[in-house]
Image (cartoon, rainbow, N blue to C red; front, top):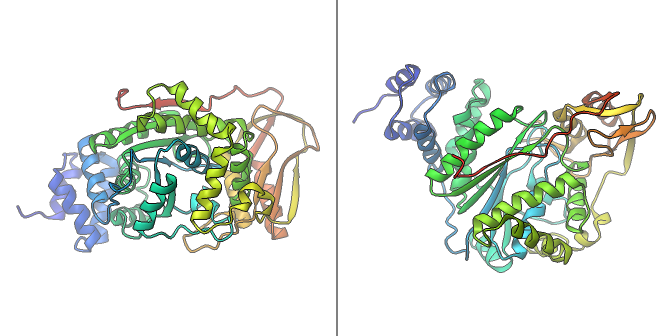
Length: 440
């Protein structure tokens, strides 16, 4: 049957459902260049206003997942698990979760990206270890997972290329914020990456893409549905991102905090979210059917020191310096510091969290464009959490930087991010909801 992009745009404009063949025609045609930008822009705008059914969304996801390479992990022994976060400030859970699961013999074969904007990237954090490389051949990647149950590589250039091309167009046509388009973008990469179990950490709050719990839940339900219909066991955890996760923001500083958690210390919310996400990955892998038992198994990997040793083993396998895991003071952190003192007394009542991320970006700890150079040594340490009482003259945070002017700008940004009030705020739960396939 002869198809025309004009007819497909008109059909979606009239809010009619597209067939699987029509969606594949659009995705493949735009990826190979036979459908021009202006027609794809019109199609995306029609989707933005008219939406997509769940069946259309699944077809769009699979078309994008199949537009390039798909990772075949069948040579890896056991049930392969993966985790994806929708992005946040100070989110370093992948580096805590991976070693814990690997200690339990659950294979973590992970593809990660670099940071862009105010959210950090797992690869950037790992490169704080001297010599660490995420460039592995597929054979070495699989061998490493079979040997130590944990490997992490950068996304290949040809993994879901349709998503990269479509997202670039969405970014300049004001069509980013549409649920089906967001969900298919995330899930196409996860499905192409080959894991059997996908646990999604969907952030909500002032530092997240989904600012309301309702929007986060809607996105989570769509993604869990896509995963189920694609034959992947999928669970979503809705978590709070109204303040940084942990105390540290910035690549090397966040790695130091990862090490603290794996030593049995670290900030409470960071520990709790890491254990929660990891527990659902243990359940998905079939290690146990009991959530509390999964938590206990994971906690034991920390208490015994096994998870910290596994992190060092993982770093060494990928060319990094394992001694930095046991002696984190060897990690390169900016030598210049600036204290951020407050001018009033009261409770920390609220935080515009994306502004905290922007303060780190100003210092050089994030990328404004994909070509931006990143400084792994800069960042900030927040000394107080929401609800804490702070006195006039106390240090809210310490800034680590290599440029005095940038440090002053970051300080101004950080002070504007926080509100101090006479009364404490209502305490918000860290975990807002859990969405499983059964909940659907």
